Image (tube, rainbow, N blue to C red):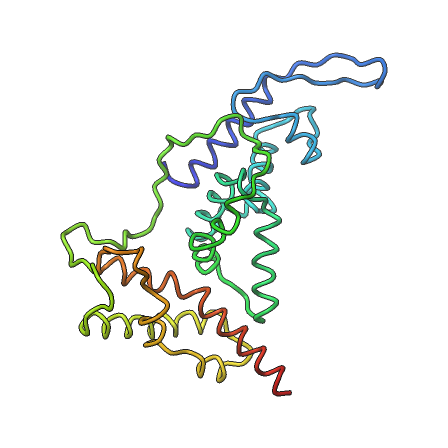
Amino acid sequence: MKPIEYLKLQAKNLHKDFKTQTSLSDPKLRRKVYDYDPKFFKIDLLVNDFNIKEENFKLGNAQHVIAKLCGLEKWTDLLNASPAKIELSVLLFTNMDRLEVRDWDQYVLDIETENNVKLDDDFKLQIFKEGFLEQEQDVFYDDYRISKDEDTEIEWEIDDPVSSGPTEQICSLPINEEFREEFINEANRSFERIFERIEPRHPEQTRKLWDAEKYIDEEFLKPEMLPIDRDYALYLIDASLVHYVIGLAVEADDQAVNIN
């Protein structure tokens, strides 16, 4: 199932749950109160948290609620969204028991503010997948879903970075000179891509702090990661460098403050 179809299904399921609505008049409250027999979502919790008007709840209302659970302002934000933004929306939805959207939004805002940058959708997705959830792993929130649809297979529109054929394995450290040179070159290429995206406040000082050889020799591969496929290790260089380069930019800012 494609990501956008998955979210459409969630909206339909939410609408189905609202259709189980029954009502009765409460003399104390002097208004109608509603009861539900849902299969997919905790309706009472959603109504309270999202201030939902229960009368005449339509599919469009359900789509709006699902959009909110995905970190979007409205459903139409998905219509022209990039593949990365749609994937991130699904990840926010499926991990709602591990984080709140506002926590993620604040996390992104802090990075952008501290580093004077504007992150694009691809970069946000990369950061989310590489480290954000690991930081939140001991935090749990109320889940608006009655049951998780973990068996649903979502077809992400991305290329598999790992070759399907047999490749060389790295089984010990330090890596041989051939691999080391290849990894250093890839680290430098990844640094330039990330550097261009984050646009650090003090670019010259950030570049001075970057040392591809040191990163590959001391920071990248750890003994507990072995054995590891060579091609997969190359892919991980770009993935693991995001937070590292941001850290260099922050360190450069601190140095600039101390000098001044």
